[in-house]
Image 1 (spheres, rainbow, N blue to C red):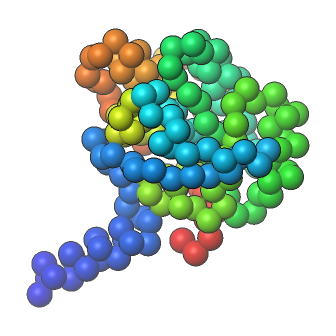
Image 2 (tube, rainbow, N blue to C red; image 1 turned 135 degrees about the vertical axis):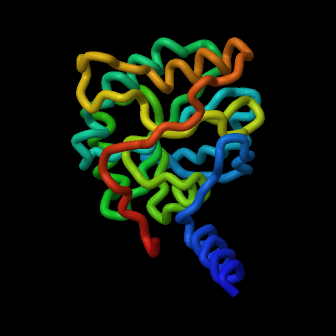
Image 3 (cartoon, helix red, strand yellow; image 1 turned 120 degrees about the vertical axis):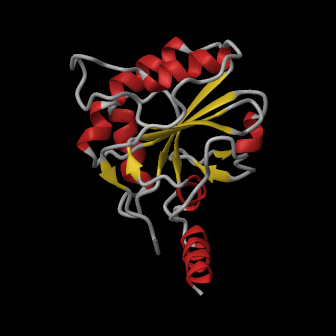
Amino acid sequence: MKRTSTLMIVLLMTVAGLIGADVGDRVGDLSLTDAEGKVHSLSGYSGKVVVLAFWSFKCPVALAYDERMRDLNGKYSGRDVVFLAVSSNVNETAVEIRRNAANLKLPYPVLMDAEGELAARLGATFSPSVFILDRGGVVRYQGAVDNNKRPGERGRVPHVENALDSILSGQTIEVQETPPFGCALRRTGR
């Protein structure tokens, strides 16, 4: 009876989006519209490494990472790596996101995930948090951008950069998962 109860809880958490993809899971296709109204499909990025960065203009921790993410986008530009910010907060409108992304000069699109479908599929719970998909759409890294909440802190470990370098060189990623930190996502019905 205890085992059945445990299995039911795990099943319910999975259905509710509280347990998402693990490293090694294929994400599958999903289409989301960006803040400019353009539709982006994960299958449209087949053959490219995709960095999905959950972002919020209302989260000071996420905002502290904007410059670092801009730098990473520039570093991997032209190397078949695509950066996509994802807004999964029900309390942020497309107009607000578009205005803030422009003011912050984000060099990549911000996908609208107000219903939380992508966040639930991946198991994203914080902004910022990053999921890196390999060229076949398989999760290869998930977690924090690095271990520093503020730029310039000592002892920085560049998790996302290390993962991207490993993927691009065909090597195994040494650290495939780290705990994300920041602001909790505000998702509908979750």
